[in-house]
Length: 182
Image (cartoon, rainbow, N blue to C red; front, side, top):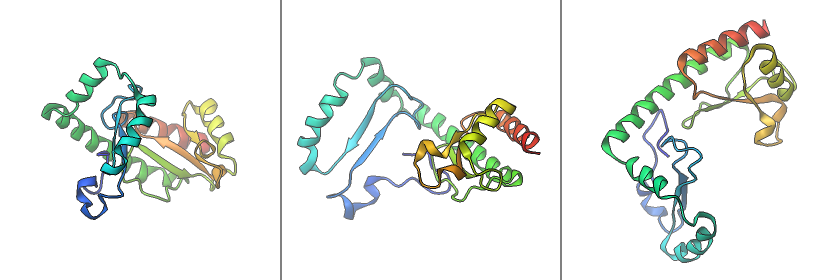
């Protein structure tokens, strides 16, 4: 997808040597702001298309007409300019959190290259991220997601933070967390 920050997006067309084994599955949800519309695409080697069509028609039959027109509009020049501005803003929000979370004892071991989430290590603060998330929610009104929602491996030390909210809301969340854990 195109919601990347520090480099140009990698596309299937930029990998000519991989064309016979490359599958791309994506949706309009995140980058195109169409979460919940359940519309997407699949790019696959020609030899697999017939079998994939049989599978896909059972999952994606009869996408609503309005969703199809909205998807077409997503590729207009004006709309693409809006998405590019949004990508830039998301990058600024990511960078803001990457700067301020470590000051709270929350580390981000892997700098995200895309999307709008940070997977954060809170082991310096707690040994139970699920409980920590509950305490943040009820204690200071900040909602984050425990690592357990994303797998069992070391889940108790991680949380996920979305930076889809405004810069002002993110600053408020940082301030509330700082006060809460002080």
